[in-house]
Structure formats: C-alpha cells, structure tokens
Image (cartoon, rainbow over all chains, first blue to last red; front, side, top):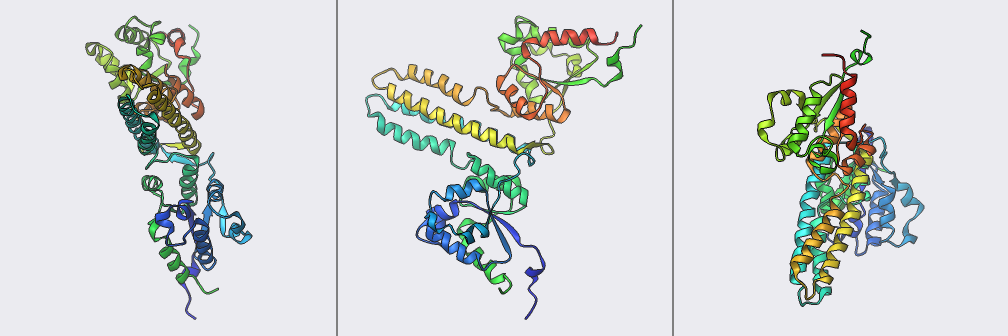
Length: 204
Length: 204
C-alpha cells in the first residue's frame, strides 16, 4: 500500500453554513429535502479523514428549524464540531468597518427611495398590495448581499479564527469572505468537493 | 517658579469632530457661528501646551463646508494635525461587528415599519406631506445614535490608534467610543476643558 500524502498533514478545517442544506439551488445535489441533504452529507463526511467540519452553535440551531430533529444523531454531533468564535479576543481589520458602513449607507438610502415611491403610488390603491411589493424591494435593498445577522458574523469570525475554509450558499457571506481573505468553495460544487475529499482520504 | 507637572509628560492627544463647531447646542459656548467657534478654539488652543489636537482629513473637509475658508490659516493647519487612521493596519474587536450588525438589524426593521405606516396613511392624502414625515422617522430609525459614515469610522479609529481623547457632540460616536474603550469628554464642557488646559499649560 502506498503512503497517502494527506495522512502526513493535519486535516483542513471547514466551516459549514445552514444554507448548504436549505437553499434549494445548492441543496439539490445532496437531497430533495434539507433532512435528506444533511443525511447525504453525513454519510460522505463519515468517510472523509482529510477534512474537519465545524459549525457555530447559532448555525446548528438555525439548521434545526429545517431538519427532522430525530435525524440529529450523536454521530452527527461528533462529526460536526460546534464551536462559537472567540468573539471577545478576535480582531477584524479596520477597513472592514469602513466597507460595512459605506455599504449600509447606500442601502439605507435605497430603502428610503423604495419607501417614498411606495407612498407616491399608494394614493387610491389597496395598501396591502403596495406594502407587499415594498417589503420585497426593501428587503432586496437592505438585506441581500450583506452580512446582517449575528449568525453571519459567527461564520466569518469562526473561519478567521480557525483559518478554515468557509462553505456557504449565501452570496453576502462569500462577498465578505473575499474581503477578509477567507478561503471558500463554490457552494454548488459542495458535493463534488466532498466526494474528492473522500477519495483522497486514507483507507479506514 | 514652581515646576509644572505637565511639563514632565508628553502632551495628551485629542481628536476633534466637526460637530463641536457646528452643532448649535454645543457650539454656543464658543461662538455664534461655526467660524466664530473655530476662531475661539484656535485662540485658546494656541496657548495650550498640554494637549495635541488631531482631526482626520475627512473631518476637516466636512468642517470646511461650514466655516469661512479664508479663516483657515497656516497656523490652524499647524495646530490641528490632519491625520487619517492607518485603516489597513488597525484592528477592531470582533464584538464590535456583532453589535453594529445587531443594531442595524433592529433599525432596518424599524425603518420598514415606518415605511409601511406611511403607505397605510397615504390613501387620499397629499403624498409630499406624508413623505416629509416618513423621511424624519426613517432618519431617526436608521441614522441617529449610530456610526453611519466613513468620517465616523475615521474619528473612532484615529482615537484608537493614537490612544487619544475623542471630543464630539455626536451621541452615536460617544456610544461607540464607550463600546471601544475610547476616552471622551462631555462635549458641552469642551470650552471649560480647553480653558483648564490653558491654565495648566506652562508659561509661553
């Protein structure tokens, strides 16, 4: 038997986002439902020795809203390390603060323009319909492509702390991984990535 | 002549915000107009040896929108150090990112509620009036008490970098100075602070 190079080095750390199992565009490679996608992942992951999987507890909690809780086995809890980032010790580059605030500033203005337009179009119309459209536009302006929750920050800071690879289907997170120098993988190739990692793993 | 203790130590660094010369509530101690307030400050500052004044260039530029440019003398440029923070080297604590994003998230929701309310109240009314009120409420929700511009970040990061005292009349900035452990001075006592510093300075 030939020595496997990978055996010689420590496993790479990978931080996983809920979106991989929930976002239908990305999930479809793994399964028809979030539960099925998670099971496919776990079956593959069990045979992968060259990667070490992590999830912040806030993200695992989020995932539990989408999958059958009965399927969360002890094996899974052992295989996916639940680790929050050391948020009081970690530092982020000052430039990130500038970019975040400039980005929000533009979005806040865009949100106001959408709201003003809605008010102007409301005269004599059914407000419910206008509001539904406003909510969509407002969400697009202020939520999409941005990090907007503590779960997002957990993922980025954990990846920074562990010098890990971030895998997420959220374009906002990928954009910020880029800014912060965090390694990431095309989310739609997540399954291929896992299968290659399985092949490269030393025999059990 | 007794030795002055202050002569023995390096001058304290102070980072100044435009708001000190512009915000009417705070400015009134110094002058009737921003130009007058700036002149009063400069006259006092010329006699203060125990403080060293700084302003990020972005803040000086902001100030130039409010004061008579003829009054910006070479002495003033010498007296107020214009220094941007080393934004690519400085780091901010990870926890700041969480607080900023949680704060924005709540504000974004509040902004949407204000917009929805405006749409509901618009039926059969003059939209201009509704929009004016909406702008006010939206600004309150999304702008007040928050750091929302690169100038704000410049002030905070420069104060961090220099381990300086931040003096600003902006409550949002003071709130963030608190979170980041930056020393600050009650803005309405700015003049008293300067006068005490003048008295404590060694004779010219």
